Image 1 (cartoon, rainbow, N blue to C red):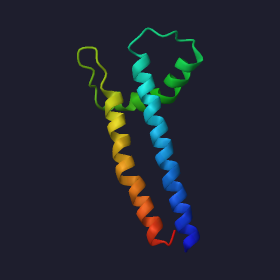
Image 2 (cartoon, rainbow, N blue to C red):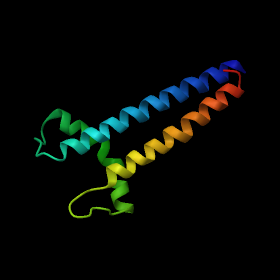
Image 3 (cartoon, helix red, strand yellow):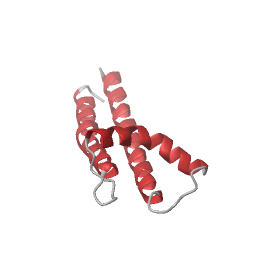
Length: 100
């Protein structure tokens, strides 16, 4: 059983890393939206390609652009913080009980 515990512990660490990295990508996307970036810049294109699908779904469900301010990145970051506070510790606790 310790193999499954170690596997779950590794999954928890990986999920935490991916969620943290994605949160920083969203922050970067929000920061570049304050200026007029070159849409053909590879970094700008990467940030938009990675974040637009998720942000579009949030905007479709909750249209929260008030006064020209888009709150969908804040909602997504709050969701990521929730997942990091709930899913990662749950996986770690499950790994401990499995003997990892």
